[in-house]
Length: 305
Length: 236
Ligand code: SF4
Image (cartoon, rainbow over all chains, first blue to last red; front, side, top):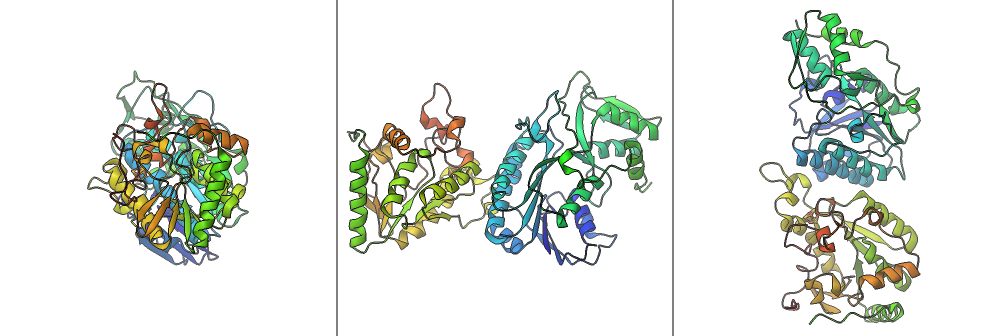
């Protein structure tokens, strides 16, 4: 089985490559990434498993290269994206370019050169925008940010492929946890970094805003289950739990009792979003084995000092 | 003077269209049609399917089409049994950025249309003798100046069977033949092209604002660049 992973050098991609590299039913892993975020963690140890990994430095808007590299793939994980913490609104055109038109190019290339490939596309719960009631894939998205809108439009291109193959669209909550290409702009990771190395965290808004989250192990477990399992077509939410910023601060204070937290603009009531675990992923999405404090402790243990 | 618009008369158009296509074929000419899958182009496609469904129908897939348009293509293919052929631009989008990394439609829409629409169609023009094109005189000044037949360049002849039609006739024809509409029409879109350059109709604005709102640009180049020089005159 040949698998291509766009964004394979990124936060989720690098963990997925490492996990799949030990699965000897896979004959080749192609990592397609433009390295635009400067992540190089994929290329350093610990060593990968025995599955051959091939790196292609490429842009998903380079249709020629994309066609060449996706030819004959059995599975395609489309992870490449211009990411942000949901609700951010900077660089509208860039989100549109990569997440919307880049995904359109992926769909064209898959149609043309990978007719048998099952596809997994990572979207975001940012497509829901915000709201008091819990959102889920049954409600019509109402993105509030350029990022959320671009991910949603990317989904509509991917949905076209569902007519003749399995396409799994996963709307991820905010991801956290250690990894080779860990992102410290992801909110939980950033707070842990600041708590550990600075003793003080900065909080935007009142702290009451809620967001859906998922630990990176839950993401990788789910993606891994989609490699060999029965193809699963549709749109799903991949989240574990909702948290407010103040919930997170409480958990951090268990590990760092002297932690200070500074409100930058606490008069602002920032938008909230709640998304429950998707029951349809039962048996695919792993059960969460640790609570938040244990997860933070595990990541804390990965710091160099 | 603007060309007088004919009243609703679908059958004479069909007969004339069929007879002309058959005459071209009798002369040994090769024919192709083009479409952008807009709702108003459906009558011509429907007639073509009844005249000769083997005539290839090209569309320019710029890479910026609404996914809804591509789904509509599939609906029409199923319904009309036509042979649609997509043309993709040769220049990847990764090479259509400026120094700041922005895509071409944000800084030079004319060039963007040239690369993504006009160029892909040029090679098709060189392959065929006759291009069946569904432009209508009531759509723009450039189109109002067109003839039913005129050279397209590259040795190809443009043939415009729908030139005298108007929006009302399109509506009536679609209704009479129970033809599907583009899914975005129900969401408030009028003229539907590439997503970055299309916007929903707004109250108090005319349909012209559906495309390239804010620019003097009214055509994508297919109906201005691929018309042989010296054969068109815009009405004053
Ligand atoms: S219509 Fe807009 S996006 Fe499409 S080719 Fe022209 S400028 Fe580019």
